[in-house]
Figure (cartoon, rainbow, N blue to C red):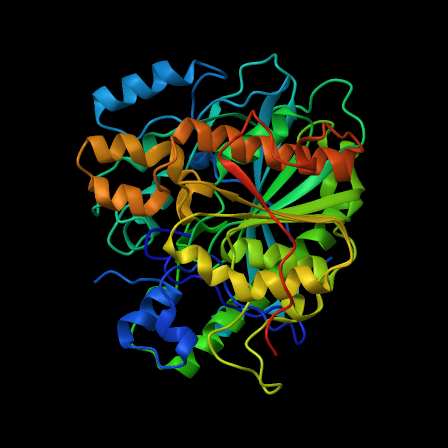
Length: 474
């Protein structure tokens, strides 16, 4: 998740008895000992600062103008001069990218955080290979109201990534995806990848990776987990703010329960999105040609931090998912359940389909070890674990692309930047993350094997393969 979230974002609960926990938390020594100080609890959750699916088109205000593929270096230089975040790096695949946003309502489930609000509402964005012609506007990274909240004292820009409140114009960052563009001509049988962000992060917080996959022939569905995500703009234009900062004074059992609820809600959201994608009627409302191009026999999932935990637990619980990636997400809880274990069900039982673990290299990386070791011991499908040298928890998000410029402008300190994204060069981190994520899904969803996953590569010396983990202590 984020700067502080990195320190404690790994627990939640999945569907049924899924003993989950959120991922990527960095400051949980006290939690692990079972005696959490108040600040440890806050860090572990969200370091607080002071038809089943109903479809609604994205509000017009979420659509904004721009161009398709200007050189990233030029955009970065221009944005630095203007005092706004740098642009996301351009996707490198052969396709232009389109995007569309949909507001879904799960009429079979009340909202787990605010049941008084009625049916669960989930917002998704789809990124896909697009027809390169036409004058569709380029999507903003965040819509204006979401961007304003993200950058406020109550938003994830501050409580997850240490950016001074209101010091960045997040609404100015543009993507490379054109709004509602028709799918690329000749697109047939496109594999689908779901994406879940870290605890408290919005679905937009790995748009660079989503665009890369889309440019290489995937449909990526990014999922906002309402009232967990920093903010979610709903169909009526209102902003659903995260409930997590309000848990700052919670007791250890309350924090544990909240984390289990978070992962449970996330896995249920994932399964609901899979149900929705399976609706032929719903797919007919997508941009031209996209609905017919989805290949729901080839669906994978990736996530960062709590999102990586979500991807693993969803794969465990739902066989519609064929492969998954966890980027620096812990898979256990702060407190033991009735079985006496802190491990989630996916960590205790593993999965029988391909799974990739991508870890960081900072002090918090040790938080992953117990749950990752158990997961690897019990998994029966193809698996690999890599760690990026010099990486921190936020390296696997858009933070690695956007925060360096903000740090140069004084919106966060160089030390905070280092704690957010580590010491690895941002362009190397971007390239390595993209390469390994694409290689994994190419191999297991497309049947194309470039051999990058077979062992260390001179192309990416920062990526270190880890041997199979020893069985965890009883």
